[in-house]
Every structure is written in C-alpha cells, then in structure tokens.
Image (cartoon, rainbow, N blue to C red; front, side, top):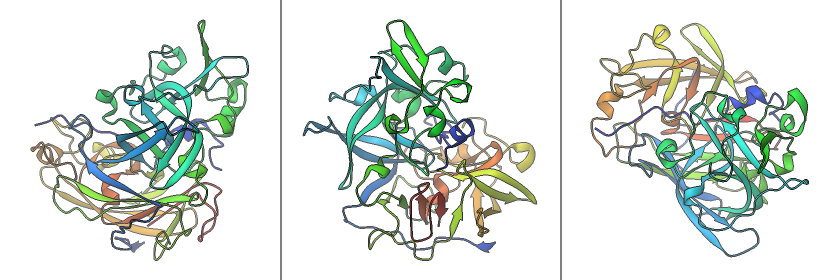
Length: 400
C-alpha cells in the first residue's frame, strides 16, 4: 500500500489573522458536468500527483512566463485550491528567470504563508500567468525556496511544518483561486502589531517583518484577467466507486460568458473570513467552508462523530463499514441546503496503489466542516471573489 496522508491545504485560516480579508432542501448536483473548449476553460483532473501517492488531488497545468517575454514554461501537477489565493510554485520546478520583488530600500521580499497543514516560505517574484486563454500579466507569485534566505524565525514559530519540497507538498505548486483577491489584504499593508507578519524584507543581515501594499501582495490570478475575473466554477463528474482518475473543468468567470452562468445553483454568502455555518446533529459550526485544496471531508472529531480513526492512513476516518450522514449548510444570506455524504474506511480505500479519486474519504477537523474534494464530485461549484459583481450580487460566496 502506498502512503497516503491527510492533506488540508486551504489557507482559509489565514483570515483569522488578517481580519480585513473580506473584501434545508436536499442539495445534490445542480447540473451535469460542464465541458467546453472555450477560452475560459482550464482542464483539471484528479491524480496521484508527482509523488504518485496523493489521494483526491485536484491538479492542473499552469503556464508562466518571464514578464513581457515569450520565455515561458508549463508546470504540471499544480494543486487547484479554492481555499487560498495566489500562485505558489516550488523553486525546484521553475526553470525560467523571474524577477524578485525588491522593496524601495533594496531588500528582497519573501513571504511566509501558513496553511492548515504547514507553511510555505520563499521569495515573491513577478510572472505572466496563463490559464486556458486567460492571462494575468506581471502578477506577484510565491516561489517556494528556502535556499535564497533561511526561513525566518517568526515563520518557524508557528509550529507548522515546512511544505517547501515536492515530498512534503505532494504537488509542484498551489493555484489559489479562492474568494479573496489577495492572500492577506489590508492588515499586511500596515505596520506595528496589527500586521500579521506574513511578508518579510530580507538582506544579508537577516529578515524582518515588513508592510506590503496590496498591489505587491501575492494575488489570485483570476482578478488580473481582463474579463472573466469575478470568480471560478469547478465542474467534476460524479464518482461512485474508487477510480483511477476523474477529469473536469475549471471555468473562469461567473455570468460573464455563455458557459459560466449560475443556472439553478443556490448562493451561500460567507462572512469576512470566507466561512459559512454547517449544522450537524443539532449543533452549529460557523467556521465551515468549501475547499478544493482539501482531499476529503474533514469534520469534527471522533468524540463527536463516533467514527474511529485509521491505524495506517494517518489523519483519516476508518469506520468498520461505510456510514451515511447528513448536514445542513447555511449561508449568511439565509440560504439553507442539506448535503448527504458518506464516510468509508480509508485503509480499505487505499488498499490499491492506482486509485486517486474517492467520493467518501474523510477525516477529523475539530470544530468545523471542511467540505473538500469529495463535495465537488457530481456538482458544479462556484467560488465568487470578494467585492466582484456577479449576476447574484457581489462576492464573496459559494454557489452550487
């Protein structure tokens, strides 16, 4: 059996630090899987990743170029994450020159971004980013590289592990296309104690926390597109049994083209942290969210759910037999929708080394519901970006 571990990549918790980040009837798939060759459609697929051991990894290819040139490179196995904002690539896979972001006093700008499962560290650089036929020109991206400057003490103090290698990350990068335009927002542009300490100015003497304007922060590439820049849509087919793969589409824009209308999708608005409420067994969990960067349903803990955890598959649930559950998602706008889901034994699911797509993979996440990749199977899920106009009003929201 190949090694599989729980991966919750979402940086939604970041907004707990950056307080100004914001800018039931039964619910099943609201429409069939959408496929198209239009210029705003990026192919995506569930795969095992570059290490060959990723469960429910939702991957795509990303093309980057040295700004303003035709010197370009396409990088595969980049994780699609609706729970974070910004493109992050391992330095070991980037082979073209990208200019460092330099402060006005000559320091190199680096970032430490805490995710649920670890932190990323490395320089902020400029790149032209192309997805489908959409282009974001000269945007700040993060290159995961600890060789240029050692990881700052303030970054290590989080207690989280580094994810700056393919062995640790399980991917060649993260494409953050979540609800927020920037990965921090207003707080990182301020000085003093209100700065959450994500950006650093570094030189030969070391690294110090610095204020970074929003224009210089790592940003969601979608907001830099010329037209389809108000959100994304993920469409994946239903998965009933473990499968080798599942292919679908990442469609840019909401209501901006003939192929990205909301249709019958119901809108669930979120709070300033990008969360809504999930109700389960008579209790409410207001810090809940939908996240394609998490590879399972992650919810509550064994003492609450009564589900035993696995002996081999670390971080997952392993019930003696598959168990069925139901929960209700509530948007801040009053929309309510019931979701039925199942939890299978992860040790059994991982008993073969070829399957990558699992509809009933789950694990513990105390106090919240993290609706990960299995939630997307058989659904069309929209992620609207904060403050951007859509046919259903301004983001941020999810719709499905």
